[in-house]
Image 1 (tube, rainbow over the protein chains, first blue to last red):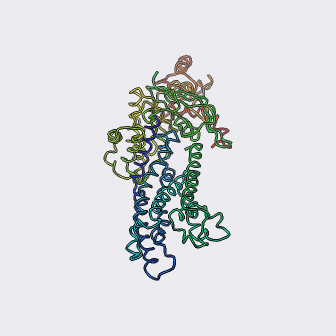
Image 2 (tube, rainbow over the protein chains, first blue to last red; image 1 turned 60 degrees about the vertical axis):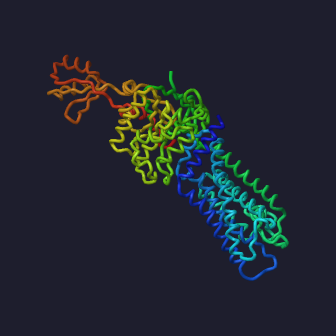
Image 3 (tube, each protein chain N blue to C red; image 1 turned 90 degrees about the vertical axis):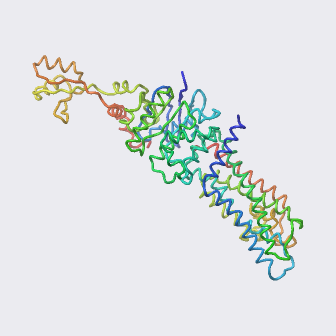
Length: 256
Length: 306
């Protein structure tokens, strides 16, 4: 019975997402931004003067740290729109077991997010290659496959993180108010300030930069992190799990 | 006995405010049950608890013998029209019903059926953001009927509808009840409820005031009233007053004796040798009965619950 209920919940959630334009804008923008930024960053870094430690993967994937915001928007509105439009009551009347409803929501976010993330990561990599010219690399280059897998995993997880946070806060505006600063805080440089780094390096976006191999040259102490990409991925899973469990506890406890 | 809604000792608090206070009643099939109460009486909160949307502080609500949320395909057990829009403005009417259908394994063909039933086929592909209040209500009713449920709850269904829409809903409610379904309709509009409901559950301040058939409720909560037409209104007035009845003059010049049965008035006229042209009972309206019942409550409501 749970099985068919969950199937129905996933189908219903995907039907909700696929029948509003904002979903297609957010998912489309994730891919377009990834590819466009991959090309542009590669063009600006790879074209001209040669520096000692040039990293073609950094050039290709740095854009993902910006493109993630489009995917985060999808993760936020997936839940936030229920509260702004008031459909949450109809949703919970249709699927009254909150755990089933939430599992349906999370799965219906995760599956398209994973697909789009994979496409976005590959698009970023491919778009960067012509801009890098002779410095371009193939899939066989060291770290490339790890970066692609990491990019796909990171984007999917950060989207689910957004869904969990929005469920906890019960609204898009509040969620974006937390997520935007959180996802930019480290990238703006705070993660590299020696006084703050011990803590800041564990924020989700900082983990992401390690996971997708764009945190900077590994031999430079300013960019050094206390963990590697796989540990970073595990730590991000902890963040996402915490957000999703927090969202579930709020959803289960609160009146619709 | 058929599917029923059972509310047992249901209680809901918001902070210090008690919205629903030990409420118990049963809604039975085959008739329209009007759920009456002043605004803020706890009608919506009660319906939300029946649907498992709000968690009661105490007590329980059962739909067809079980808590609503324990039904496998709840939309096929109970359908509800809730207050407020509850529609994504960017989603079409068809898509709104489609996701609801998919959540409960309801056939896609049923979406077209309820759209036709509610007169929305022509606007099915239009985005709900542009819908009028009346179209929104119709779509809400389409959603309630989607699972062809034996139990239906409608919260203020005629709000925002034009006279045609109001008549349509009235007929729909009666038809649904005539099919043997259990129909609970909340309202704060007495005249409308009087035309639709067979049975009443009346609450105020979260407590049950009455649970009775409409005629019985009116009888129990109104004083008898007799209309008298006479060429000698002055003497008649004096005679009625002397007998202890309160007398008022109606808009058309007829006298109305409050608390008096027609028989008593007729005997009084005969005893005094008064000419009368008409002596008749006047039926109190549901609104009068309701006002009488809730008058005492509203007295001390000022500083209390909203």
